[in-house]
Structure formats: structure tokens, C-alpha cells
Image (cartoon, rainbow, N blue to C red; front, side):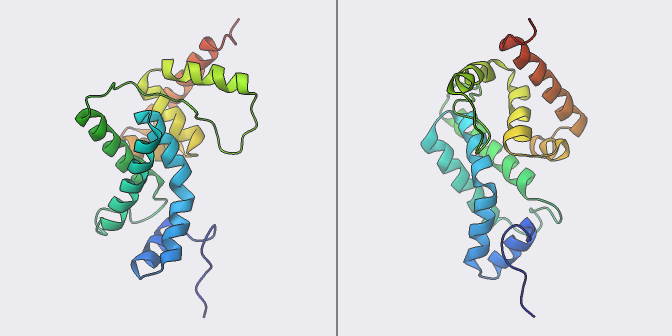
Length: 180
């Protein structure tokens, strides 16, 4: 019997298990599945392209090195990876004594067709959100996480993630002048 094909039908945990059994393609599929969302999250946190790439790579290295007791037993690895990335970014920012303010420069959903002026307006407004709201917005909208996954990644209740998301949308609406 042939094993299921890699890709969309395989779960994150299936891909990780295959990788641990020596299947390099499985790691490539897992990396491809999460790389863009992790990069945008990292870019928003550290405001540096090269450092964001380094953080994504380090996040995957930590996943590979993590024992089975540290990896979730079920579900997507997305929240686990985003939490690991967030912790790495915070450590990096602290060690560099950089500004703690999150930035959302160049962030937009992959494949979205948006007027460049709207992107500029949005990128100007996003950094003006409180850090907690911006991070929830990024994970929910740009990483495609559920509020439960966002809560897991940020170590907050799902209801708190939902509230922060609603407040972020309300504040963005005010900043973009849509309440007039």
C-alpha cells in the first residue's frame, strides 16, 4: 500500500513524522505550508527582512530539534511555530535593545490585489494599533489562524483574541477615516 501523497492532504504532524523518518520532501512541504505566514509575522515583529528570514529558519530548526513531548500531539503546527517565532523575536529584540513597537510594513495577504495607495494607508495605520491588537490581526488575517490557534500561539484565551481582533478592526476603521 502506497503512503498518502505529500501536500494538502497530509497533516502537519504527518509531515513532521515523515521528516523524522528521513523524508526530506515532507519537511519541504511543511516549510512551504507555514513559511510565508511566519515570515510576515516575523517581519512585523522585527521590522527587518534579513532578521525575519533568520527567525523563520531558526523556528523550523527548533521544530526539528524539539522532542515529541514539546510538539503538539494533534492539530496544526501553526500555533506552535508562531509561538516559537514570537519568543525568538522577543529575545532578539531584547538582546538588540531595539524598539519594542511592532511594525506592519509590507504586510498584506498573499495574492491579494490591492490598490497601492490603500496598501500605503493600511501600512501607515497598522503600526498605530496597540501591539496586542496588531499581533492578533496579523495571525488571524495574514496567517489564517482561528482565534483558538491565535490564543494558543499568544498564550491567551480565544475570547481575548476575538476581542483584540474586534478592537483592532474598529481602530483601523477610525484611523482610515471610514467612520466619517
